[in-house]
Amino acid sequence: MAKYGKKAQKKVKRAMREYSQGKLKSGKSHKTVKSRKQAIAIGISEARARGYKVPPRRSR
Image 1 (tube, one colour):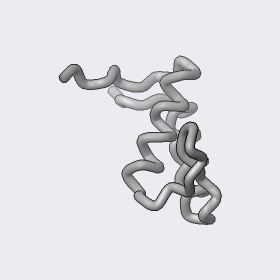
Image 2: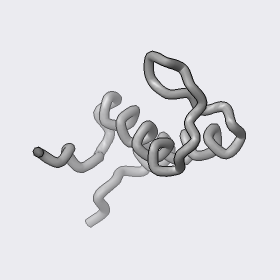
Image 3: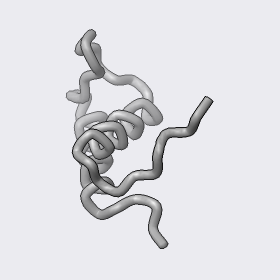
Image 4: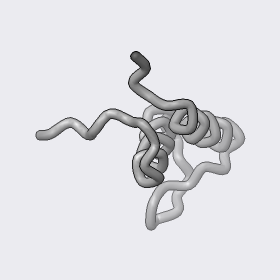
């Protein structure tokens, strides 16, 4: 069984494309994202906000 849905994968793909073009901005500060991991996290959090199939956040 897949952990991530197709629509969630599209969100991450879009975020990665923007990151590679240097156009992906982060949160309130709107600073350009420099890290691959951060770009993936942004895509996943956007998918989660939309209600797509994504595993829940780890509890601390």
